[in-house]
Image (tube, rainbow over all chains, first blue to last red; front, top):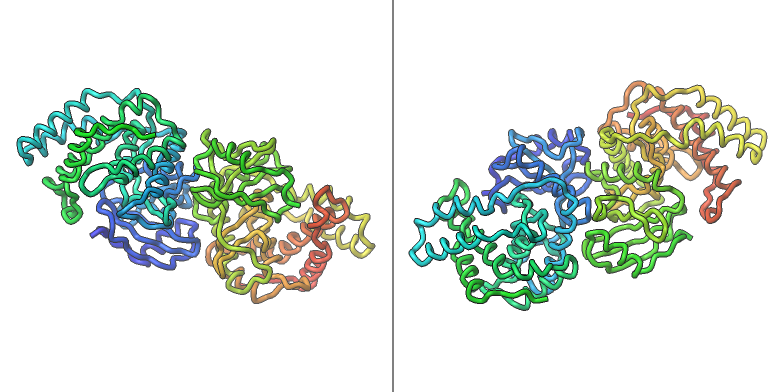
Length: 313
Length: 313
């Protein structure tokens, strides 16, 4: 599934001649992931992940690679792209843009506990602070313009009640302007499968290819919507409280952010409801197997609307 | 001994407020080292080493810190200095220039085997290659001018035969010019205690505070003079062969470098004979306990002169 472009040991050894990473010891394909081809690579210098970019182009990639390098430089446990002999983070392998980055310890969890939610909350706040000194800007490609363009494409697949919900939420957020809230670099996809844990400690944040510039609170809402959510689409108040208190202790939330919280949770749910509807009804080749259930985020959204979540600090 | 400036947990916690490294979990002084104050620091983000610079100043330090950051970016296992919120690698703590860098795995060995010598040889070559794209330059502060200035200061402490040896070697190398050999950034002090090993694998190169710009072969000679040396001051030919073959496989030695090898071994021995004589006879405060025996490098030098070592490739 996830290996779209295969790489042999001989090809990788030749490519590594442009790096200072020592001898290739092991090459192992990674099955997870639907956007890129990934391999675990062990050399005499250590453990790395090789990524061949199947859709992102050499124009898009510097933002993501420079961001990861910046965050790693600030001590955030994220993949640190390795530079080649010409001091470039991005190379080309078997015709694809390619990058080799440090491999982080830990594994993802599907059932996070309170301590893990607190650890993610604190780490997200640290990432937001470290991102403040990153100079590149990437407008959110899943922002208001994307919602306005995508909602009409998925609307025909909805029943009347769903369509009304979609219309009203898209209209609601089209009027909102979160530009007055603290802005910066956000991960924008920090779901459970994008965090490596060593017990209750964060070993690594991975998969920065949705990262962009937006309201920091939006990232908090996306992350809480996954980490602190029960399977029925209802927030676990206690886990959400653990998350937000830990976040707040590192980067205090402003009054404006507290006021915006209930709407931000809805916006974050809407974004994934729309994208999952799109991926389900308009799948691209090779993505069918991994299509997620849009119904989950529809339930999350409805629950947020009915409960008007407040911030627990 | 090595903690000249003490740092409390409260002081460090306050200082870490300027970083994105999470919560301080542990602070432990390191007893090794005679130039700086070092602490092991564990935070929720990982394991780090805090260094307070006792002699080096904020003018000297950017070269070393930027070099380590550059090499780490290229996948060389060396301490990676962490940037603070203002994106600076160098801070100030308790009145001293200070830096916090990643902590590397492994421990040093006093009795390296063949495999370890080969691993160091390969890693040194990788470091030399990765350093080729580093743009800053630092003339060797222990170069010809230093030898010419320091030899007369230690000469009065030598007997007639030793003084004649010192004079002739200083004069010999004053005439040599290795500028035609490949140049670049060298570690210049990659002794056994500056390498962390995990069994036969190099876990880390540390202590870059003698790094400078010079002939790469000079670094090879300094390193071989320690890693492949027997206690009697005679090179272990087999270990030296393992080292040089592994180095050569990564960065092939030129004909000019092969021709210069016997003299380079002598120059590398002379440098440490002089500095150890100086440290023994003109100790600075706090360094007495760690003074090394100059006699070792006197024997190394004499053995090199008598055997005229050739390169084994």
